[in-house]
Amino acid sequence: MERSLLVILMLLIFTCFIGISQGQLSVGFYGDSCPQAESTVTSVVREAVSDNPNMAAVLLRLHFHDCFVEGCDGSILIENGPDDEGRAFGHQGVGGFEVIEKAKAQLEAACPSIVSCADIVALAARDAIAMANGPTYQVPAGRRDGRVSNVSLAADMPDVSDSIQQLKTKFIDKGLSPKDLVVLSAAHTIGTTACFFMTKRLYNFVPGGGPDPSINPNFLPELKAICPQNGNVNVRLPIDHGSELTFDNQILRNIRDGFAVLESDARLNDDLATKSVVESYFGLLSPVFGPSFETDFVESIVKMGQIDVKTGSEGEIRHTCSAFN
Image (cartoon, rainbow, N blue to C red):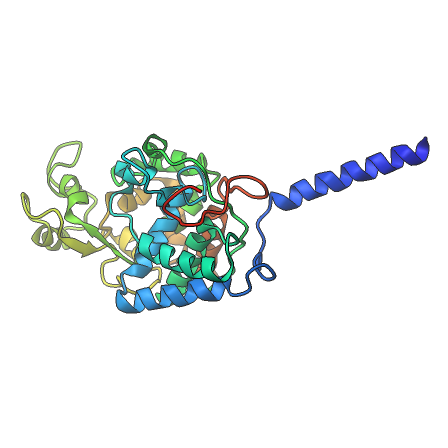
């Protein structure tokens, strides 16, 4: 009897261990099942960024937008009808889908039904950052693709017009701290935005109307020249003033000094917690004794990449990224 109880107890412990293992991501997840997985994604991303340097920012943004709705599960990639998540207002301008599909097609040919679209998105963002002279890091993999994609689920995406309290709340709801908010917002160090997102900030800022008073007076004429009132809202401008193609902390300096392009970035100066994070990278002793922006960014993006992931028997491995199996 005692031996039987011991066997049952050991089986229960083993079952629990298996459950825990399946619920975790791991670096080198495809080492045995598809050894070329990561190198294939890297090759496809390198070609895409070589053809269009702005693609690095596009792929990084895609990863963020995927993870903030239903977790990092590739739900943003689905193109199945008018109610798909990707059609949400908060996902306007998100792209890079063709890069993900190209990598997926190559991997399906080499390793059918092994590599998830969600992992490809995460790996592509890592490679894009490296190709913009950003930090290199390892991506824990093992995500599975979600089976749900609905526009209504993206209603709470962070928005450029959100207050700092709204932004903090949306990040906290995803398990991300105010520091993560600052560091991940600094991903705007690469890429561009459209004048569409600048109109309110430049000409009808609330309260009072007129321009956002937090814009540096020396910067305001430049912004208005690029995005004149009643002008073409599709004209694009760099988000990181002066360093738009290089991944660095220049955007945090811009935010501190009133040269933030996006309203949501400027709002990081409105809160003691987020403002102190911004300033921590620019103290007199910061270059030697202060925090490393690159190290902090890697920690935050790896953390973001694990939001509500589906692992083990959850979800599926799609055959194509734009459609459920």
